[in-house]
Length: 128
Image 1 (cartoon, rainbow, N blue to C red):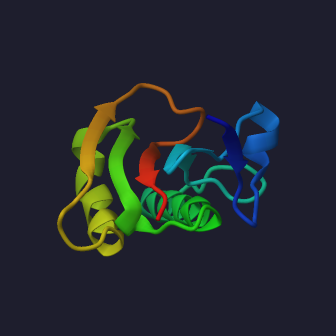
Image 2: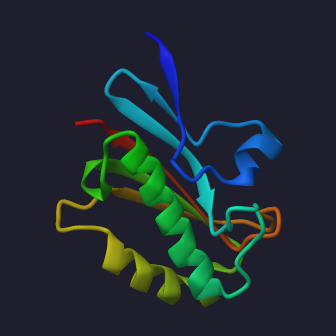
């Protein structure tokens, strides 16, 4: 099986700086790298709610580049630097973005460090 790198139209600087693909297509599956609330220059959005919205927007751009939407997502993993304080904001953004049931799997992980970010989201999607 071959692997195909997928990048959004507005590729941000982190992909080049850290030498990774936004996503890899393998068969009918899309494995999306962790998306953070980075601006196009790779810097972090300082406001937490705006950072989460930007992370979801960056994720949507990667999904779109592969012909997917959030409805195609089957597995989600999120990383949080302060889960207890952040979860309400994350869930509000998530509710505005994720479609109707059935919802994807979701695993939330508390971490100490995200390279200057406070939230990261990675997914696996089935390509229609």
